[in-house]
Length: 426
Image (cartoon, rainbow, N blue to C red; front, side, top):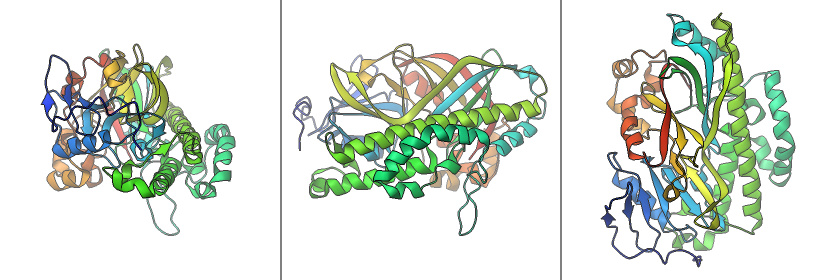
């Protein structure tokens, strides 16, 4: 099972950490590749380190794992990690929110153009973009379209031919939520925001992924990888780290499906952005334009890339591509700053950076620890929901975004600093 071109670089140092004159902390893993952690000044709990160590011991990992400063425990593998693999992909590392990411758009509006009362803007956006989720027999999910508008039809026609190719092979995926979820936000940490930058200009920024259909594709192939490796699962640190090997039918089918889901996620964000801009124009009477400064980037995806002279698969599980000169988005929590950044192309991080602030506690813990009054204080000055259902997204449940940015100053440079004034949560 062990690939020839790795594992020989990992000295047996019993998980010791060495701190040199470099910006990251390197952790050596027995029987695995090293972990390079951009962890200076930010908390890294032991569970997160253990999960990273487990992933580092998978035989197909290439060279080392890069852990971003927002890293925290995730399903399958660590959120905020860059997982390079040789001739294989770990579906659970990619996860089920395939193609989740951000889009940001600069407008010609300024803070002075905003009404004193921002509540009507939030309501207009909430009306224009389905968000949240309801479940129950015979009930329509409020987070999906009842009758998708024409813009959804237009974008769905771009996606349909390749989706039909996938469902011909795997009919079960046809029963997923796809057409009625295109152009919808979802739940959890997905959001739509209006922000001001350092020049008081208004940006529209949102965060979402491939919705129900991406979840169905991810779940299906994670299970398939475990099935294909059934006789070898005992040799892995965790069964969720089962992988699909290049050259097998399921590998090729997964690559096809995951690329489609990533495209779905990108178009999903485009539809929401267009509908959000239309909603803004209904409330703000001053004519405005959107500029050419726009960023649409995944932070939960896999693609083939060249690194250290070899062609590999790079899975960014809560990480953003930060090639030299490439623009990206690093959002903070609701109530905190967010950043438009430019990549520095650092090879040690596989040209990547963090995808946000990163959680310091679970959603369950946040709901136990904080109250609605805490939420109101933490989001003062932001037009957003301030109720029990969003306490798990309270800013204190996340790492300090300023500390996260300081820890990765060799990965990106800050181009714009954004502060939200309106936030719509799923």
